[in-house]
Every structure is written in C-alpha cells, then in structure tokens.
Length: 359
Ligand code: DAH
Image 1: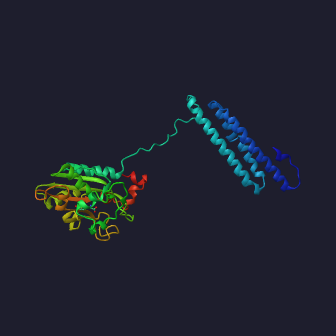
Image 2: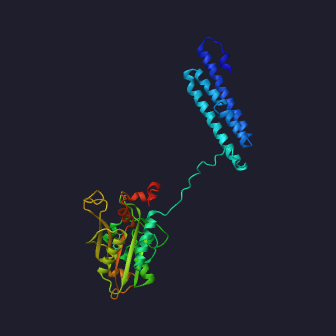
Image 3: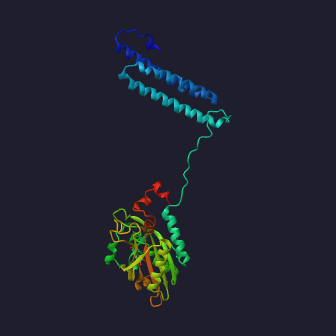
C-alpha cells in the first residue's frame, strides 16, 4: 500500500496523501467487488467472494486496519466510506445469495441455513365489536328475535318525523346531525340512531314483530374517551297484542344478566318515540366506590327504552288500538367496554393490534 513508502517530512501532507490512497482503494474495492458479485453462479462462488471481501481476513478488513494510521481528523470521513462499501457489498452478496437459492438444490453444506425461523405471517381475525355483536344477536335469537338491517343514509322522515319528532321538535337538537346533500327531494341525513329501522321493519313485516337492529350510526360529536362520531347501536322492537312494560323490564334484565352478569337500575327518561320512556343504568364494573368513568356515582347510563308511542305505530301503519310494544336502543361498544374494562372507546378504531389481539 502507498502509505508505507511515503517519506515526506511534513506529517500533515503525509496524512493527506495516505488518506487519498485509502479512499481510492476503498472506492476501487467497491467497484471490483460489485463486478465480481455479478458473476456469482453457485453457492461456492458466493462463499469464496464473501470470504475474499467481507471475511475476517478479507479485503475490507485489511483496509479498515489501515484506519489507525490516518490522521484523527480524517478518520470520520474514511469511516463513513468503509461503512458504505461494507453495506453495498453485504446487500449485493445477499441479493446474489437469494437469487441462486432458488436455482441450486440444498446440498447440506450450502450457505443457506434451513434451520433459521421463517417470516412470521400474521393471521387476521374478527374485530372485537363484530364478534360481540354476533354474541348479542345470538342471545336475542334465543329469545325469538329476528335480526334486521337498514340504510345508513336515511331520510329525515324515517330518522325523525316518523319517530314522533317533527321538525320543530326540540329533541332533534339532542343529536347533532350530519346532513347529506343528494339529488332527492327528501332531506337526507347520516342516521343518528338505528330507531328509523323500527318504522321500516313495521312497514315491511307489519305486526306482530320482534326484532333487533344492530348497525352503525353517525353524530357530529366532540370525540373523547366515551364518544365517537361513528359508533354502533343495537335497536330493539317488540310489538304484539298485550305487550306491557314488564315484558321490557324482564327481557332487558335477562339480557344484561346473560351477557354481563351485572346489576341494573331503571330510571324515567325522555325519548319522543316512547311513552313512558325509561333509561337503564348498569353498575360500574371498573370501580367499587366511584371513579372517573362513572363520575363517582357507581352507575353508568347504558340504554334508552320505553313503550312505543302510538304516533310511531301510526306512522308505520300499525293499529295502536290493537297492538302495543316496547323498544330499546343501546351502544354495544359501551357494553363491551364494561365487560372487558376498556377505558377508551377510541381504541376500537385505532387499528392497534396490541389492543385488538387481546380479544
Ligand atoms: N335512539 C335513542 C338514541 O340514540 C336510543 C333509544 C331510546 C332507542 C329509547 C329506543 C328507545 O328504541 O325506545 O339515543
């Protein structure tokens, strides 16, 4: 190598010359090696070239050893170059290895280690809310309920008016609505609740009827640990002769007992489509004596319900002198949070596998 024979007295000049040499050598090494790698045709050639350039006694190691003889100030730039050459060679050799791997049988002493673990393949699964809704559906099916669907872009008539909430009704302000522009004459919204499917189902199937309606709903909500703008609801409707409030209490108490095994309490509540209206609270399972989630009360608001308002039956063409019914609506995400102690509803749509894989 050039630096051995240099005899200039000025060390500074010596160093420059030395470093020029080592840099040039590195660049040449890279060029030659990449040319050589292109010619690899079998595992033996690969092994030979690997040893020649990247082995412990290989060319690169030999050049790198010269580092200790160069000026301190020059070392970083030479170091970067050594690394660059090393990475380029490693990657080219790796590519060559992968290319010939397919074309040569494994002879036992090949460079390919068949005992290395393979790449992990992640298996997909159902979203926790999907499987939970299936569980809810199964529980209601056992009680004789059918499962019904409805549109997510809904007319104001079905979403509000037919549910006893005409345009002047203050309850319309309870739900911040996303309005949708369409070429239809009817005013359309993203449904704020699954309740409109009560009307659609009664129009289609008439009475008696016993259904649940799981589905997505949309509200222009401020998002926080308990609220999202897109969320799930499960609506329920039972209409028959002689249905009373005790059918509602019995059915829903049984449901919560089955799915959660928690205590419940009922309070009066207001919804325009039921009279009387009720709300069910569930005991807070996250704490024993009041926490942030239950705001220190020990109870969590869970569900709206009540006896179907005669105006609603009328909108759907069902005779309220003959039939009566009960209805309810709840959020399965809220129920899932309670069941599994999840403290932030936003986790469900986070796509975070560390969360999702737990279920
Ligand atoms: N639709 C109501 C809401 O989104 C929930 C609800 C309350 C549904 C009472 C009902 C009911 O069927 O009877 O807040």
